[in-house]
Length: 274
Image 1 (cartoon, rainbow, N blue to C red):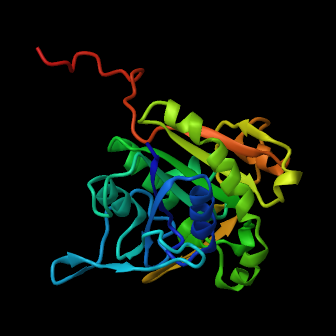
Image 2 (image 1 turned 180 degrees about the vertical axis):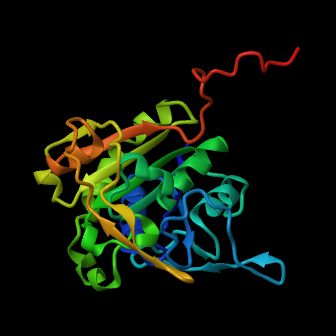
């Protein structure tokens, strides 16, 4: 039976990354449906937000270039919300796999907590659907936005999108699909690819989460009635074997992560029910 795949993102339905990922999935013979936010929703984590008109969530057909016959929808909601309604049949039969991306900018380190791309994957996995988040490392601190924590690019950088190696990230992701479907449902594969031609990729490696993201938000100024934020590159050296270190060395990184797990080593003695 053909694997049914829902593809979403947090950069919006018109972003080039989602088109590249959908095209690669179709080329692999998968049953593809696309549903993504009508507008950019970077930095939304797993938020459940939606825009309603007359008590109904806005859903518009949004055919994608070069993907005739692939159902595609722009949704007035966050990526996590889209993932949730997808697994409940909002866009046809529930998918077996959710692919989220390809995000414009790496989602690496513990900053994945804030990513809408990863948040959609966490939501799908929590609801019984295997999920993968896919990102392309194209950003620097100067090109990121404070709202996304480094997951989105400033408008001035969009002119370079046509030159990005979306196909590399898409191929890495689809090559990892058998590992995803064979793994535990509650785990998410977080995949980051350098912005390189596939032939120049040094390989795909398992990476641990860096202790920080590519950029960190700081408070640049605060005053009466306002706060101004800024982004800066972390001052710490990259630790070998982490996702960010692998990207810097020209490897694609894959990390298996889970959204919510119980902590068993905290001292809660004496609080058990009688």
